[in-house]
Image (tube, rainbow, N blue to C red; front, side, top):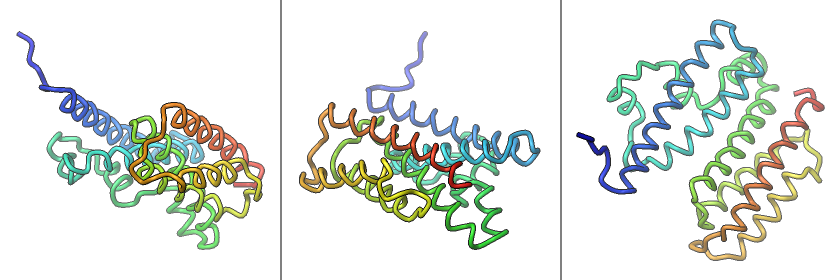
Length: 209
């Protein structure tokens, strides 16, 4: 006899999100242990950790009503992932960023802003993938991303990400808060975000970051 875990589409999506949250926490724990044991290079660790943190922030925001406490979720499902909880919930930035902050305050601004930009890029892309396309959902994310990009002096004024986000912000500001992006607009915005993110990643080595 089959046992149904859900009664409708909404419950199914909730459990699928629970599963993804569970996977993110477990993956972060493994990544933290690999970094501590020097199994993974610092640069690779930082990139993967930034992605996990950004995915976590997007998902935990989506599940805010059903999972008000990540720590309780962690305990309920016996995850035993203290390093992941520290990284995702308490710290919110990769260990490498924390180490650079301790080593040199002057280096913190650039490193933290780069991490901030990565998280804003991924959060915006994740939001579109979750079909959250209302103007009042998308506009703040693009505004935050644009602000972070403009704080990085290593990026030129005509950097692709800066110009594209400015164009989208201008377009959205003319729409109502409850208006939804069309499927074509959402697809184009996601494409522009991915393209800008690739250009952003490519620009970092040339700046010595």
